[in-house]
Image (cartoon, rainbow, N blue to C red; front, side, top):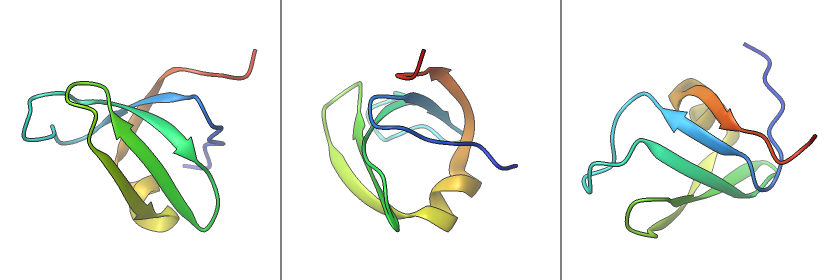
Length: 64
């Protein structure tokens, strides 16, 4: 799955965050992906390879 991710995209993850939310917003794109939980605001950095395995779908795209 070769999805393109942009800053501002909202993605749905395969597993929920402990707060119960599945939706995360991409805040940084590079070798690592920064993302912020839309439920509680928790910020994490994840290696791109792991992030691509964890993503289920793009909910909203920042690129029009």
